[in-house]
Amino acid sequence: MKALILVGGFGTRLRPLTLSVPKPLVEFANKPMILHQIEALKAIGVTEVVLAINYQPEVMMNFLKDFETKLEIKITCSQETEPLGTAGPLALARDKLIDGSGEPFFVLNSDVISEYPLKQMMEFHKVHGGEASIMVTKVDEPSKYGVVVMEESTGKVEKFVEKPKIFVEDKLYAMVLPGFSGWTLDSQETISLIGEGCLIGPDVAIGPGCIVESGVRLSRCSVMRGVRIKKHACISSSIIGWHSTVGQWARVENLTILGEDVHVCDEIYSNGGVVLPHKEIKSSILKPEIVM
Image (cartoon, rainbow, N blue to C red):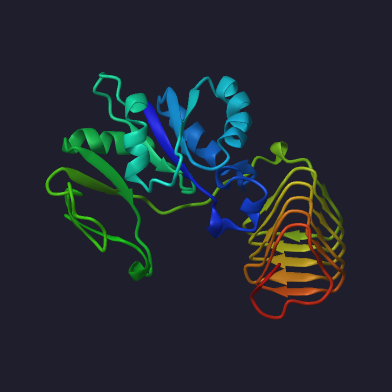
């Protein structure tokens, strides 16, 4: 069985993190997003993964070379010379995906994180006997997304709202993705130094090689590899990019995102700042803004 992962292009919505690495290599729970997907595919019997890439394919393939051997799964590349959307990469990789066996194949977007109930999806697909299956999820604000109208009992897709309606009648079925229950981190995978009197949690990921000094408060945040957080700093609902520093008594909150090698000085406050790589923040960011 095979799978196609739509890696896509520049990852503009994940900037400033994607100014340093391609989007699928940004860590989620201390592991690149694409590795979560490849491991889940391997676990249900996928033997070959095709990456549809149009930006920095050599970076992606070099990174995954070791994991191809470690996971015992074949990883190949289907390179786009220009962005092809969603259906275009499928057509481009057709010869790699269809081998005459009649086996279905998976297609994933590389920036989707879930618990990957792929086994259940395979069973769902076999039971309904349709042409294709898609996995959908419920959202609080559907006006921002394409909406799938489906039969509640069977999952048969009736139509898409604000999306193309070609090739959906009686052939496409949708499986609702169950609620996301979060990840449990293996503490043995991360070697960091944590000082005395720190309060960490809930929902915190700390990458390897980090130094968290005494009295630090962390909640609902991701601290990437090699970060130093100095005494009594407070970080919540934010992402601290690779090899950055947060100064003493600094407060970083409200979806602040620090790119790689950003240095926040002592006693600075960041309220939703988005800071590009290699910057030093010497004055507070009082409202959400991009710091170039």
